[in-house]
Image 1 (cartoon, rainbow over the protein chains, first blue to last red):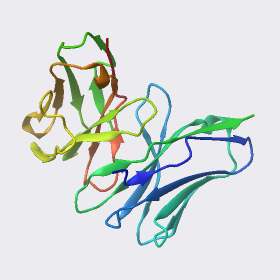
Image 2: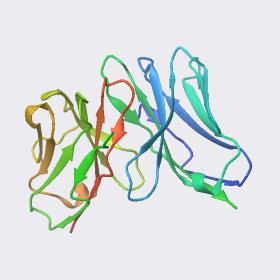
Image 3: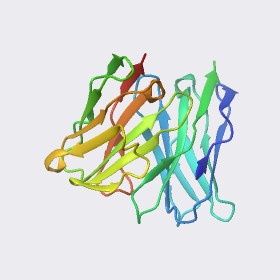
Amino acid sequence: DQQVKQNSPSLSVQEGRISILNCDYTNSMFDYFLWYKKYPAEGPTFLISISSIKDKNEDGRFTVFLNKSAKHLSLHIVPSQPGDSAVYFCAAVSSNTGKLIFGQGTTLQVKP
Amino acid sequence: EAGVAQSPRYKIIEKRQSVAFWCNPISGHATLYWYQQILGQGPKLLIQFQNNGVVDDSQLPKDRFSAERLKGVDSTLKIQPAKLEDSAVYLCASSLDGVAGYTFGSGTRLTVV
């Protein structure tokens, strides 16, 4: 039962353009959503999060959008840089359980 | 603030052998998690501790995996006996409140041959 899904295994964009990574979830009890970035041989690093009471959160070049009715969130990176090339994981948690559930990940490649 | 420490970084064992991983969470973090990440997949939660009590171990293969958290601080994850399909990166994470602020260690890459 995949409660958090990232349907695009990979994404390639040109430097300076926008990267959009998508994530869908099925459990309506999730009330907090997070994006993590992972480089090879390292653990996931927290990037940005959003509470279910908001529909947008912005931090520098990174913006996360949440559409609760569609159970969908997306991460926008503008402008994309080659150093952004990594695997991006979407994750969700219910404050009732504290159990962080991850999607399968999307590998982003930003070409110079 | 020191991060989540894990050791060893890499381990290669033969199938049917046993192995143990160690995690030291961020000081003061009550919640500790062990995740298994198989290549090409997202991390899968194996066990969640709140202080030294188990909150969720529904995904832990209890016939071969065991975990404990001594005095609510350090934790060890053990596999005995190991199978080929246990080859993965084992990630430890800790959180202050179990909702946000999760911090991950660098993981232990296990290869079972």
